[in-house]
Length: 118
Ligand SMILES: [Cu+2]
Image (cartoon, rainbow, N blue to C red; front, side, top):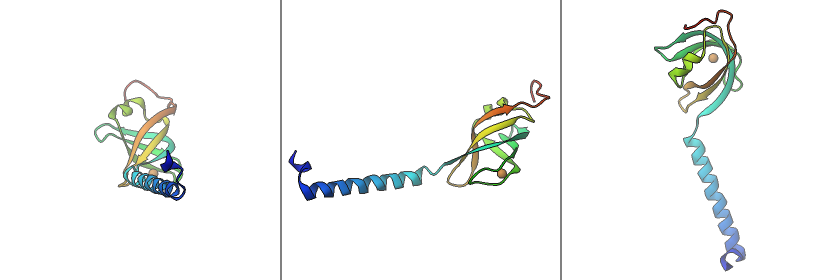
C-alpha cells in the first residue's frame, strides 16, 4: 500500500506508534505495581486465625535485612504445607501499599520433630 511507502508519513506513524506503545507500557506498569521477591527462612510459628506465618528470614535483596517477622499467606491452605521448624523458600509479593504477602512457598528442609498436625 502507498500509505506505508510514503516517506515522512510512514516515519510519523512509526513515531506515533512507538509513542502510544511506550505510554501504554508506562501506564500498565503503574497499574500493576506488585513486586515480587524471593526469600528463604525458618518457620517459627503458624497462626491460622490471622493466616500468618512467623518466619526468621534471611536478607531479602532489594527489600530488607534478615529478621524475624510475620507474613500473611495468600491462601490459608498454604499453612497446611508447613510445620514449625521447617526451612522454606518463598515468594513475596508487595502491593502498591507496601503490603507483603507470601504467594508461593516450598519446604526445603523438614524439622526433626515433624509430627502430624501442628
Ligand atoms: Cu523482614
